[in-house]
Image 1 (tube, one colour):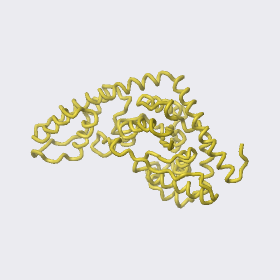
Image 2 (cartoon, helix red, strand yellow):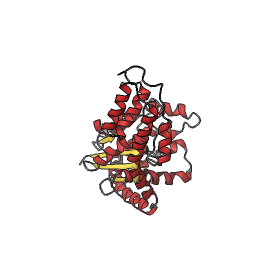
Image 3 (tube, one colour):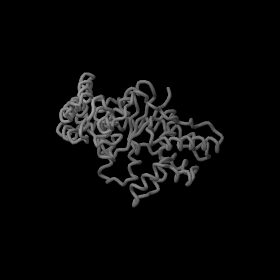
Length: 329
């Protein structure tokens, strides 16, 4: 069965965009592929998180994964730092990756602009660590967004270069996996594009009812429809997209008609949107709280995932050491 791998950095809670954009599809994928889902705590070090936050953040993401439907009996779910083989492969890949290539990566340039006082080597070599995450399992498919496509090309380059240098076919070239219609682009509440943590425009899966209602009621709008059947500006289309995601078709049609005949009241739309979001998220939030309260279970699941991930990675590293010429343990 083909291997699929995906990871998420524990730098905050999962939000509505994560859920509809990827995690729901992960739940389906775990039934169709040999799936590895990991929590990328090493990657988070590029922003220097506080030591006391690292383990707690990993547990939080694990609880949210489980609450969304990922099953540790079907998929391998692990914490990145529990698999030390990743760092050994990261070293070997760095030896074959050139400074000029890494310097041209767009995500590095963007992050360097965002944190000019913390342009560290880990940030610079982020693509090779990502490549090690993927290649240690010899994954064939990796679910990615547009912002990761260049890093995926670097991962393929790492695989090709290793294979060429050592005249082997050890590493398959991992391919981008797109969800098609299964994944949705969830807009933010600020009138801009995609919902994202750094933009501060999110509804988080763990937000309680009061927080959800407050955020939705503060969502950006305009002066309202000025002409019948006029196109919706982006800032309003965002609200209707959210309505389409969490509400039923009849509700969506009702407010769409109100827009078209210029009788739409944004307060009514937001109240309905908030209630439907609360209804959608409440069961997930309750499961998150249930999992978070059981740290013993979370740690057991993480250990089980680490054992499976290390078995997969160790098999690859034995081959890598043999191919390069190092002693195989």
